[in-house]
Length: 66
Image (cartoon, rainbow, N blue to C red):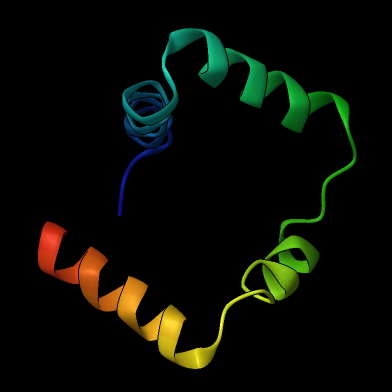
């Protein structure tokens, strides 16, 4: 488990590496200024995918990162 500062730093690295510096900052701004319920968002995140498609994405992610 990360200490809070380490978690913030690692999170920013992930955002910057995946979105770029400008889009990472935009993402942070969106999260701060708009009410956002992460749990509700997660409930519908994969609604457009079949179980097989989701499984394939998970297996691909696992193979690439573990």
